[in-house]
Image (cartoon, rainbow, N blue to C red):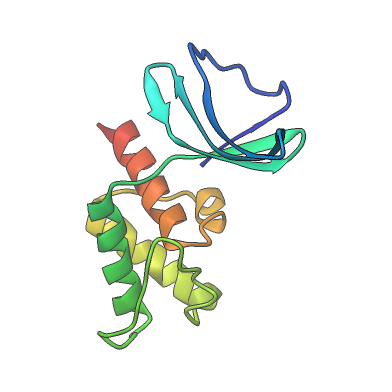
Length: 140
């Protein structure tokens, strides 16, 4: 995930479009923002506070599904249990050792190597899928 706060990051943006929710003529909240950065479009932009926003790059559905399957296998979850991109490892019952085993399973399945620093930032299935795609892109 990319984070942009204040002026700490330079971006080459050609356009920005926002969907705003209005109440009695005033802007109540920002629903969504779409912006192209260096030729890639990032459609999921969430406002966290007045001075800070977050850009989430969505991983491919097939990557998320593979990660879900590996997580279910590593945690020995029942086949009918629901694991989605938003599922947090801790909420699924994973402790730190389980998380290490999940990362090792992901490395083996995708043929990548995850640095310890990067692995510590993985909290959800979506985080893992996005990191995998980033590492695969670098590898290619």
